[in-house]
Image 1 (cartoon, rainbow, N blue to C red):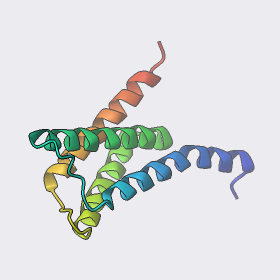
Image 2 (image 1 turned 90 degrees about the vertical axis):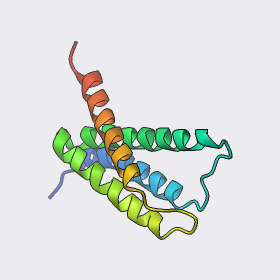
Image 3 (image 1 turned 30 degrees about the vertical axis):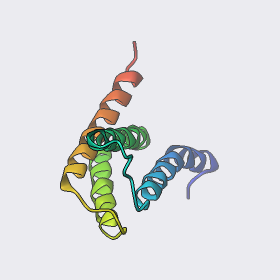
Length: 119
């Protein structure tokens, strides 16, 4: 049986992960993400992908305390996100986005670990 302190810690670690994943899911459910900025649109979308997955990577490594499982879970979510987008009208699944997401997850994990290192 999980104690109250332990349960509270689990909720404190995983609630942000679930909330952020839900935000990513909600954004992926939007039918149109065209900013109207032409060539800059692709750059901005790539930066958005990398940033949202960097946050997810940091939250995952914070919750799991191990980088490899955090990366694997972040990558799995990126793949499932692209699969989800395949079924959203006006959206497509793009393997390139999974690669950008994976780089974001790695960056988030690395940044979190760097900032958590004792001085």
